[in-house]
Amino acid sequence: MTRARQNANVTAAVGRNMVINGAMNVAQRSASVTGIGASSGYFTCDRWRIDTSASAGRLTMSQTADGPNGISANCIKLDCTTADTSIAAGENMTIQHRFEGQNIQRIGSGVAGAKQITLSFYVKASAAFTFGAELFNGDNNRQITKLFDTTTDWVRHEITFPADVDDGSSPFVDDNTVALFLVFHLHAGSTFTSGTLNTAAFADTTNANRAAGIDSFYSSTDNNFFITGVQMEVGPVATEFEQEQISVTQNKCQRYFQKFGSENAFDFMNGFGIASSSTVLQSPTYLKTNMRSTPAVSFSAIAVADTVNSTTAITAAAVSNTVNNSKIALIEYTVGSTALTQYRSYYVRANNNAAAHVSFDAEL
Picture 1 (cartoon, rainbow, N blue to C red):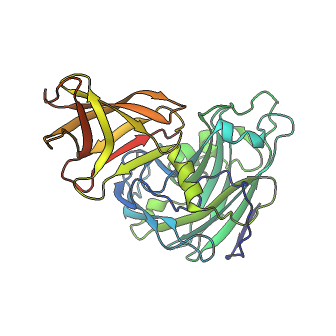
Picture 2 (cartoon, rainbow, N blue to C red):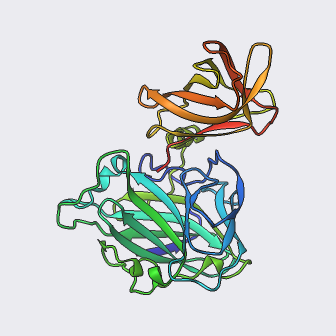
Picture 3 (cartoon, rainbow, N blue to C red):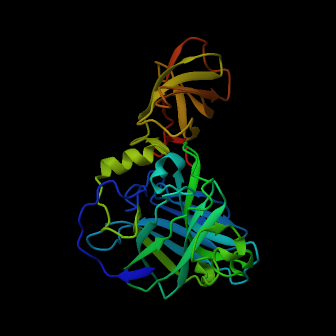
C-alpha cells in the first residue's frame, strides 16, 4: 500500500525508527559534492550511500536546507549535471541505507512470527517521476519493491511491506555486518527493469524484477530529486516522523564515520605520539564513540611536528590496533623521509591548511 499526503502534525514515536539520520541533519563529510556517478560511496549526509554502476550520468549531491515544514529543515538534494539517455543494460543508480543485522532483529525475517515493515518518507522532484523503494535482504538474497511517484511539492509516502516468513530457515544474521538494504531506485537499465516488478511478497532475487517501471533521474539535466523524513518501523502503520535530538543522531552516525577537522591552519589534530622508527609515529586516538569495526583512516594536509615546531608532512596512516571495543585506536602515521627520532614524542597538527582532517570510516 502506498499513501501520499502533505505535512502532518508531529508527535514523538521514540525508538521506532530503524533509519539513522532520516532527517538528513548530519553531514560530517561534506555539505555538497559534485561529479558523483563514476563510483559508489558516502558523500554528504551520513548513512546515505550513492550506489552506481556503468552510467555516464553525473550528479551533485547536497545537504540542502529545504525540508518540509515541521519535519526537518534539511534534505538530500540530487541535481542531474550530466544526462544519460542511452541506457545500457547494466546501468543503475540508487540511494541506499544499510542496516546491521543486530539492529533489525525486531523484524524477525525468515522465521515464524516475522513482522511487517512500514516505510515512510518525504519526497519532491523537479517534475513527476515514478521511482522504486526496495527492501533487499542481503543475508538471504530476497527482495521486494514498491513504486512511488513524485510531484514538485513535498509529499509523504507510506509503504507497508509484508512479513517475510520464508521457510523459517533464513533469519537475519545477528552481528555487525550488513543484513538489509533500503534502496531507492532512481535509474536502471534492462538488467534491472526488463521483468515484472516484485511487489506482492518477498521473493528470491531476480534482478530483472527489482526496478521494472521506474523513470530515469538521468533523463535530463533539468532533473532534481529531494528526500528527507525517512522512517522504517515494525508493523503495518506509519507513525509520525520521529524527531530526534541532534546529539543522539550524531552519536549514531559516528559509529560508522568520524571526522576530526581543523578550524585554522595550526590546530592540533590528533594529539601526541611516540616515534617507533625514523618514519613512523604511533599515536593513540580516543574516538568519539565505539565504532562498528576497526576503521579505515583517511586524511588531508596533516603533519608531524616536534617541540620546536619543525614539521614533516604525513604521507600514510592506518589503524594498527584498537581496544575497548574500537573506542581507542592506535594510529601509525608515516612520513616520507627519515625525519623522526626513534622514541621521541611528537604531535599531529594541521599542515598550514584550514581544511586539514583525519577521518575514520567503518561504514557498511
